[in-house]
Length: 237
Image (cartoon, rainbow, N blue to C red):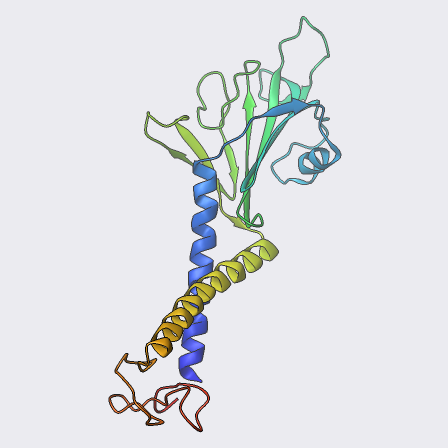
């Protein structure tokens, strides 16, 4: 019983670490294209429900990126930043060059999304927003369950946002998925090994040649296929 419990903990720990590693890989290396347009109902909800959002502003545009293991939604609205730092809704005029409030929402994981996080920033120059470059054109970055890391220059982008806020259902199911996958790999390899040893008339446990004895004369395991014995197991189990 204790041995079985330790095995269970091992498989679950592997599943948890594996699903976190997979989510990280999808955050660092994702393939796909961005699309933009009017915010969808889901993106409106992301804007209004997120604690980093400034209340009272109506988002007017959104960018989105969806791949099998990574998703990013960028929701934005124009604002005017007063000299004292206060913000107000920007006039919709082609002559106006307002700043923009931008909310970046990320989620990652496979087969289900298991972590999420967000960044928010004020871009003082139109289309100059970058959540990893808070220079003179951009305001400071506010973070919610996400970090920004620097990558080598040869990477397609110098920075990546890494969300780490757990999504309970996704974390649970992904952990079980990878734990089961590891168990199946172990089970399949051991089952194939036992079948090959039976075919060669070897002990399934130690590969010692067996004769007509119901137990292996080397390790004492019962020998399947001999009279009166149905399965092969080591002594003491």
